[in-house]
Length: 214
Image (cartoon, one colour):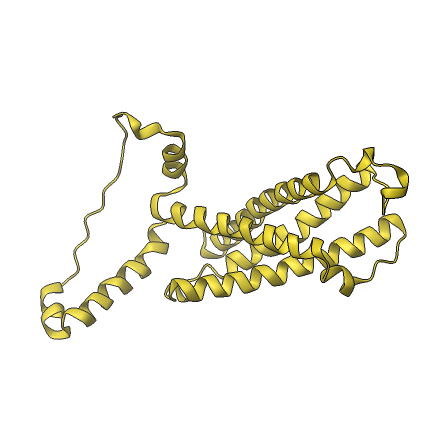
């Protein structure tokens, strides 16, 4: 598989997983906010509840942020980003996530106006309590995604799932591959560079080798 195809596969995989997660998250959010609305008296409803339109809204809502989140996550998954401090990565991804959440709200308003022939103003809706609640909710979902991504990068997807399921609570036999790697003239480099610069060299080697090994 060529490098271009691997990148395309990684991008499509990131978008697909992100789409599934965010559509599910949107459905959960919409379900919590809409539970019991159809049983309210008509004079207490701002907008009549419709199951079909609710499903369309949640799919559009989750898809709009899911696809963009997957693309953003793929673009930020670079060696240059990984070399930043954790607090810088968190700020960068959090700011991007907030922008995506606001964009998804705009898409939801446009879709609602089209489906229900309404004229809901965008700015008042964005600064409403419902929008603030969505920003908080989407931030929590993003943090959970980032957490599992970090665990996945440390252990691997299959091992992470096995750890969650408690597969390794009892001893078991598994097949594993170990790689032993030696740097040419590492002792000489260590003596010439000093321990701090040599440690940076080792980190750079691991960073450069990781993508090739994966």
